[in-house]
Length: 273
Image (tube, rainbow, N blue to C red; front, side):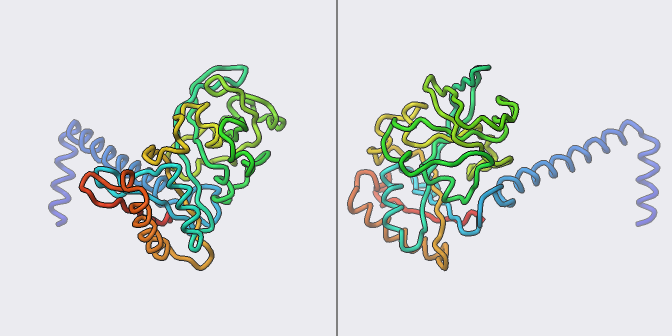
């Protein structure tokens, strides 16, 4: 073993070019592994920032028409999940994301926003750094309450950290929104790995690029769902409950709840931590 080490050292000393390539290759390999682990840690292992008791959260997926289990859900299904699983879930929130045109008055740019149900910050247990989250009456009538919560980064970048930013307005896709809150630093919600600039209530989705039938079309599946378990409830209990709900929805809406193999869609509850 010692002789092998000595031979290797002599070889490296006599061939500096090869030595440089070997060192660079090792460095790149170690660096790549470190970067990959850091990414996995940020996206999958580390608890989401500023989310209360993430171990009580589960992601809810509806199987896709082509069969994969981890698909997104429609707004009508979200409403049914929320009401029919109230024995095991404290609440359910829905979110999706899309790019938007943003005008702050001083600049026009592209922003990445999340469109969320009005209970979003309450379900996650997230307290804004300034102002407030959405109120229940901002989650009722489409197109009525043009309010927005901006990210801490956007607050710093576009408003220089102005403590009086709440109450000011910005424009998204040409519609004027009132700023009601600033999210805490580092908060990106449950879409981890996504640098989010702002959050808009889902009732304003049509104003920022959503479809006209979002709230009625059960086949319009584009929402990610996150649920908070009731105290004492387990992810396994939630999964059992949703197996029943999936069957009921298939019976009630066979056109929307049957996949290409003529099987009923399934709902999968996955712990967020």
